[in-house]
Length: 235
Length: 121
Image (cartoon, rainbow over all chains, first blue to last red; front, side, top):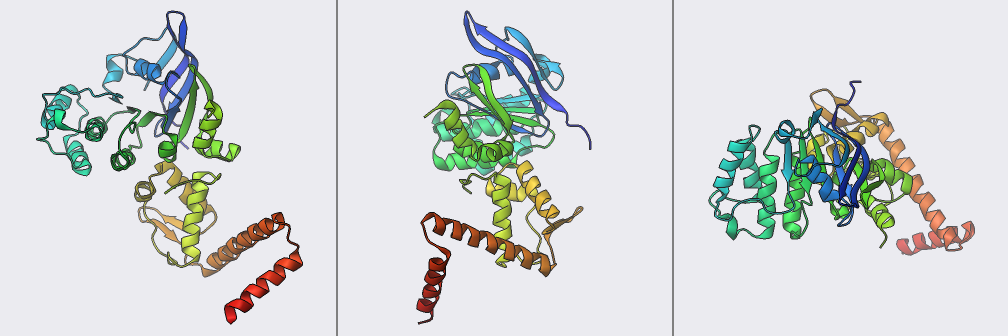
């Protein structure tokens, strides 16, 4: 058996905003080939964690490594990030967004992007500012998944989209998952996402209150992850 | 697919495949979908599907042939054993629930034979 490589390693990761602790001593490793769900309500620290992983914020204490590197230029080229808000200019058409990604990221795979657009029923000539919320999300996800990255970070990929778009998004994620990379998905829509996750991390007030293999947790608790979520965060 | 019971997802999918095999919906010797295909179809993590096939292989219900795919066993004895044991599980559950309702074995037996009589009329 060959030993699994760790794509993400966090040790005592801490973030303070003035006196408020947004993240408190997080220890977490993510193996290659795993899909990890970061679960928690708003304000639990999910977004802060992701901003640190993507280099948008610096931690106050502790350490995080992605594929062996400290967060910086080297990690930005191997991390493909789907923010929870729109990041494209309104004047663009989809083909301009494609060009932008091609210029920015060496690992961008145009063929893969075209296949994803096709699957999502989007066209290159469409204008960004005419897209619906669901179409925006589908386009953004297509750009993110079309990169051949080591780590994909999807922040609330199905929040606020209609059921049809949601299914297309889930199918695109499953269909484009790569064995030699890992994926972090944050969500509070646990029921829709849980069958896609290998590992789950419950984040509450900046601390990891429960983590483990999703199947093992189902077995131990005799519940689906959705039920455990309700137990951890209270109805 | 909705995974609603308290069981781990890989066991729920194993049960789904077992039911299809014993009912004949999937034939003996038939090729099962690839891990990737089934993962997409059920919208389940590919590692979970991998585990399903590993466990089914351990139970000798399927065989994976390198580069060819995963196939249901040709051995009808294995399948009939599985069918018997799945039936036993259903009967156990039925008895448990009837006992929960306060029925004694004699009463249950009587009710079942009455049901069969009705069916034959």
